[in-house]
Image (cartoon, rainbow, N blue to C red; front, side, top):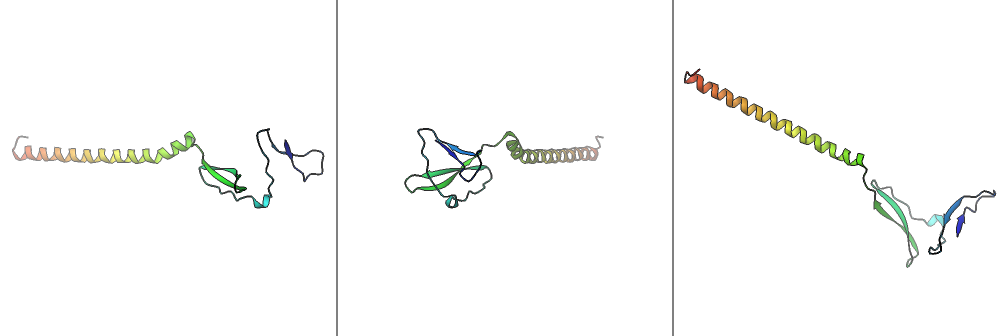
Length: 112
């Protein structure tokens, strides 16, 4: 079965749907269609409940692209680098203090 646009008076009409033998067609008024929500990272799929004869949307997760995964990792990597640089600076300062204390100790004992 092929469903075509009925509002056109031209010979050329748009095909709206094609049904195979195992599918069923349900007539509905477009004004009663549920409102679809735009949810980031999800896509809406329209379903029909045979028992209640109602249309509804289910929201399915869209797999993240490589770029999106990298964009999520970037702030984490920046934080790790900053923490590493801070730890290195702290170690450097501690080493400088230890060397200064050693020089002071040796100077006081007149070794140097």
